[in-house]
Every structure is written in structure tokens, then in C-alpha cells.
Image (tube, rainbow over all chains, first blue to last red; front, side, top):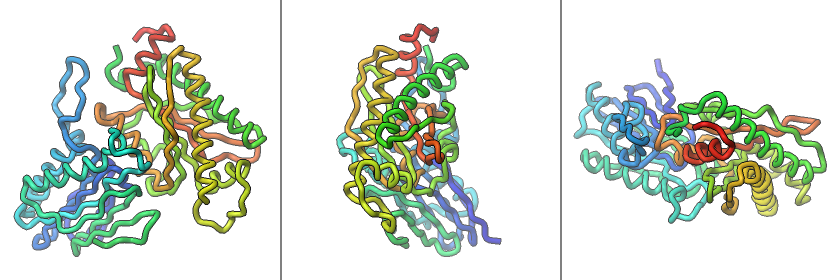
Length: 170
Length: 206
């Protein structure tokens, strides 16, 4: 039975063929789709922020990152999804990545924190994948519009839907 | 000292509701003048939500809306966001710019700039009333506009205020005229420091 799994903001889902995973309305956030074609196992993460060092500590309290917090950030979120896929039988060496999102929704100047967050998310996701040796085979990033991303686990194909443009298959 | 949104108590929330009420009430009055119609606002709502639940509490993530975003800064820092349906944006801007655009899928350039100006007027009314209530000096950025999926729009303030916390606070109101409920919202996001300052200025223990 084919199931559609929905990934929220700073969340992930890992599953196997023939399921489909979707994450709606990526703005400055970046969707990371990983797929192991041989095992037909894949995962989709909705990354919100570039780096876990961005987490601000409140006063004297410095709680460790929870599993949910780790999914907010590119560095920790990508690592955790790769670990979950590996535990389900996928191999890091076979994984390929497709990424989408990282827009600047309001076209706010790149020099501001708000305007540059999309670009920094993309940069960090690329770096995190690079550290794990996972190649990025396709991407649909940047510009100023939102994207909904579907990962088909039967084929590894990713469809990117947006309001301003035709569906883009990557 | 409040260190995270979770620490706001019921009194704090009531104060924030009142601030939202006054701010959005003034914005509704400005909108009413523009439309030459009575515009009322919904019961003020202050929510503290998990990041993932923010969008769902307002609409569907892939619902397309017109959004105007302004940053406020100075002694208070945050974001004012106006969300409206494309239909509402057309109706509202008809009062400013007359164009026959019934068949058009989006908004014309003139109407886009009308919506931007509208955002400017409403945010100035909102923030102006917060400033006079608290005695804070607050300035506003120019308005930024986007027409896109609600989830991608709301991710902008959620990203800005969600780094420090697993939850986020926002004050949300919707507008209505006598004839109908407009699918429009005015939403205010602010940081924990600003909230602490506001409470202090209003004489509340924090």
C-alpha cells in the first residue's frame, strides 16, 4: 500500500518504496531528499536554520539539543536523517541527494539576517552533505518563491511544485 | 526575568491580548476609513505554539495568500505580517485603485503597490498605538510584499524567532466588515526581550 507521509517544519521522515514523502511550502527552509536506489529507501528533511551553533542559550541554562531541535539545523538534521536511513538498511555510500528551497521570500536585502537565511541554509546543507560524502545530483534553490517538494520512493524522483511556476521534476 | 515564551503567565498573555487588541483595533479603524465601511476585529488571540503548529493554526501551508511584512525596531523589535486572500486584496485595493481585474489570476502592479501601502498604513497604526501605550520609541521598515504559499510566508518570522525556542508567541487578529468576514489576518511576532520590556513598562512583575 502506497502511503503519503507529510514532513513539517524542522522535521523528517524516512521510508521505503512505494511510499511518497512530501513537505509543503519551503520558503527560506531547505528540503533535503536522500535516496538509496538499491535499497529503495529514502528520506526527506525540512531544515529551517543553517547551523546548530545558532541556538541561543537562555541565561545560565544550556540544555542539550533535543532530537526535535536537532532537526531544525542543517548540520545536525542531515546527520540524524542519514543515521536513521542507515539503521533501516540504506548505505551512506549509495545515497544521493536532491535539495530544494532556500528562497528569499520577500526579496529582502541579502545583507540582512532575514534576507540571507535561505542562502545560508543552502550553503550549510551542501557542507553537511559534503562532510558525509553524499553527492548532490540535482537542486532547485534560491530565488523568491515557495516550493512544495515530493519524493517518490519507488523511483527517487523529486517533484517541486510552486505557485509561480510549472512543476519541476529534478 | 522572562527567558522564553513558555514562561509567560496568564497575566502576561492578557496584557499581550490587550496590546494586540489596541494595535489591531487601530489598524482596523484605518482600514475602515480607507474602505469607507465599518471594519471590526475578531477577539484577540495570543498563541504560544510549537513551530510546526504555527501555520496550521492560521491556514493550510499550501494555501496561496498575499502577504505584507514589516520589521519594527528600536526599543521594541519584531515583525508585523498582514495575510490576505488574493480576492480580499483585490476588493480592498479597489477602494484605492480602480481597475477591472475580475478575470486576472493575480494582482496588477498598481494593486500590488496599493497593498504594500495598505500594509504600511495598518502597521503604522498598529505600532503607533503600541508605542504610545508603552512609551517606547519604535520605527518601521519599508513594507515587503510576497504572493505565495502561506507556509513559506510564515516560515519567515518563524525562522527569525524560532532559533532560540521550540515554541513561538504571536498575536493574531482577523478583520471583518458588516457584510463579511475578510480572510485577512494581522499577526505580530516579537522577541522575548521586547516582551519583558513591555511588561516592565506597564508595571508588571517579570
